[in-house]
Image 1 (spheres, rainbow, N blue to C red):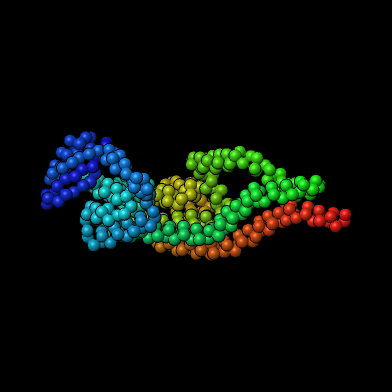
Image 2 (cartoon, rainbow, N blue to C red; image 1 turned 90 degrees about the vertical axis):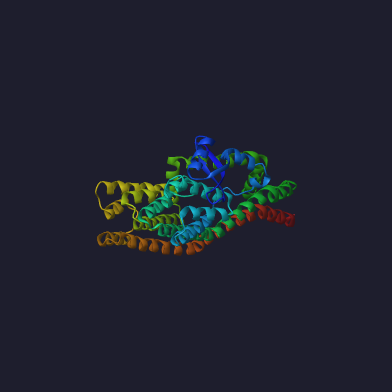
Length: 409
């Protein structure tokens, strides 16, 4: 059904705007009238968006919501619901003060859906790009248990951990990426500008050049004469790989390969396992059933290969196997972690023990990220040294030969 944007007067005479789904404008007006509101204007939302898009400023508005904004929203909802503020009033208040137009639009839509009689979890689930299945599941449990404030607090804490993890990964990989980009730029400059200049100099002497120099000149000539084909191949390969990764099998294979990449594969694996342990502990503590919790967590880990192994755990539990047995069969956890899981299952404190498992993995990730630069730096030095050696041999060897020939003559 189409969505209509309305402007009404409520029972107190206040001007209220919002959006509502309906078969047509008359149906929306009837529904608003039944709620005691006086419709002033009702327009189809799609037409309103088209008319608003005429200004150039709309083109530059952000059409995404950052993780920080979602964390702030969750924290605000925790504070408001804990203080006893009605949910619809809280959502409309936050929407009115939101600077991000997409967040404003989303919160107004959630509030309107709530007014039509839909529960909060279902209202949030209408926006899967913003509210993940994990987010919706925890909110759903919070609604049913009367602890909605605690649900928002839990998801806010989880999102903060996700943000911190991404920042640590970014900080650890920033220096290597900068060096690799600098190397790529240097290779391009040498190929396009430096080597051709020396090539013309060497050709003027009609001397026999060493193979290192001939190789550099060949690479330079090939790049200059076929740069458009090289660019086309690089772009084609990039989009082909991207298309393949977006397929189901491609994503599964790529996620499996990421876990085996030297130096960083182990870090990715521990990040995913720590995310699994932390997320599972949170949803179990919130009251989500085990099988449903595993299904939610599998989609939250961010790795389809690990998610497939978690799905295998879920199938084992459905067959009547214990959690520790299915976890051991998955082959994902170390013996030390398996002992903690077994103890948690026996004592009934699985959520607390999995929190400790997550702490264990996060400590290992912190150590690995801090030492990642020390491990990568020698490799980068070897790459730079190899480039300098090739350049020196290719450029300076013939110059030395020519200098010796001149002196000998």
